[in-house]
Image 1: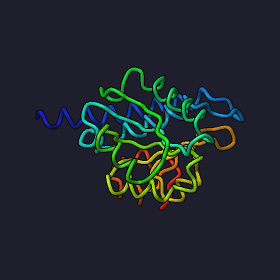
Image 2 (image 1 turned 60 degrees about the vertical axis):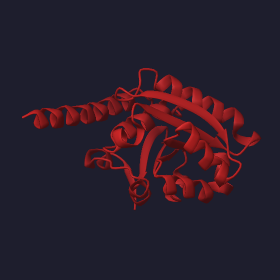
Image 3 (image 1 turned 180 degrees about the horizontal axis):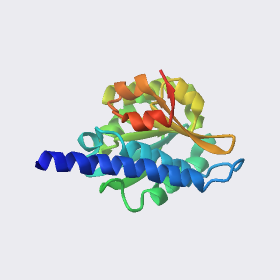
Image 4 (image 1 turned 120 degrees about the vertical axis):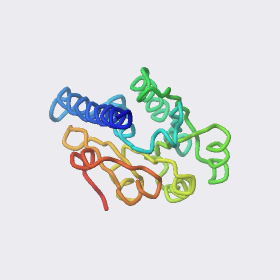
Length: 196
């Protein structure tokens, strides 16, 4: 009996997340670009639907916004602030920490993941030349990779939210998501663009 109640509560939370996502969609005017806070909100909502979230993150979701130096520094700071704003009340009872990381090497990023407890990596568009190197880290460590670039999702990042005709578009690379240990419900896949 207790297991059934837990199952229904979990399903309720997931459904509530989808409803809230749809409500957020209705707040965005057609043709208007979505903000970093809206992107961060959608990404956090989608991550909250991952059935493996608890195993991966424990009590804290720790996001690293990874960029390639001066070209992405200012926007990466804005994105980190957007995640902090979007996750002020936490994500399914988990606290949220965000840090900006300059990509220097695979070894340096692995060191930060290991020592600082990073369990989600946001990949900034400035990182394009090093994308495959960062994906080695996310796949090897089974850390979700997220982005605001459709091209990056098509190239192997697990989850992306970007503006398409002024509307937010959630895109999931199913193979990458599975490799990184994400397990999204069919309801999320049904309202997302899926890359296989």
